[in-house]
Image (cartoon, rainbow, N blue to C red):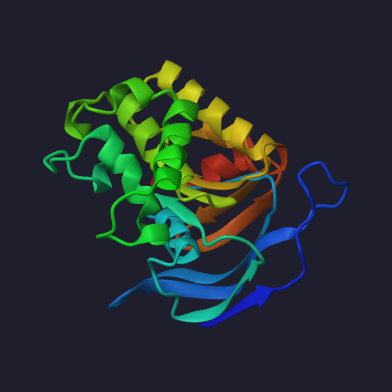
Amino acid sequence: MTIMFNKNPLSPPDGAARNERVQFRELNAGYPGRPVLQQLSAQITAFTMTALVGPNGSGKSTLLGVLAGVITATSGQLRYAEGSPPAFVPQRGAVGDTLPLTARQTVEMGRWGERGLWRRPTRQDRAVVDSAMERLGVADLGTRQLGELSGGQRQRVLIAQGLAQQSDLLLLDEPTTGLDPEARERITALLIDLVADGTTVVQATHDLEAARSADACLLLSNGRLVGQGSPEQVLTPQALTRIWQPA
């Protein structure tokens, strides 16, 4: 796979122009003996929220993993505009409940890329963590064990970990799955606020309400891109029925 970097600076969030933050062409990826993504070509616009939508097994998480750099594509081109390395927030289930981590320690993990695993947090690290936890409304949960938190609390802690990486590209895997309606709405509102502040957000989701709040959608089915555009253009009853119909 070829990875390319665009050296043209991005426009500010309130600028008139909208630029690509990520672009991929003819992207293929999968696992040994099991191809998943097939010839995907699309772009992620800077300073917007993009939803990767599709049923389980459609390739959403695999595509997100490729964009995050945790899965290596087998072929194709992946191009990032100039900016920070992406911050990746995995599904809640990917973080073990049995790990003896407090909420604050979990958020502090977001600083490992900046200072390394074994170095003590600096004053700047602590300030960044404090700010992220305040932003997500979890500052009062700092001493609680991660496994003791509710689903919504835990998800906000994981997003705070992503914010602590101070990236302008935030990738989230199913951030609202399994949450009650109030928690889903709160997470969605937080992501909209982050976009308004200049963060490019990409979330993999099968929560159609969350997807409809995005600026753009990429609709996947069986590892292929079957639709892209605004939610109104992509999430039509006909398209959704077609990809979610029983085999």
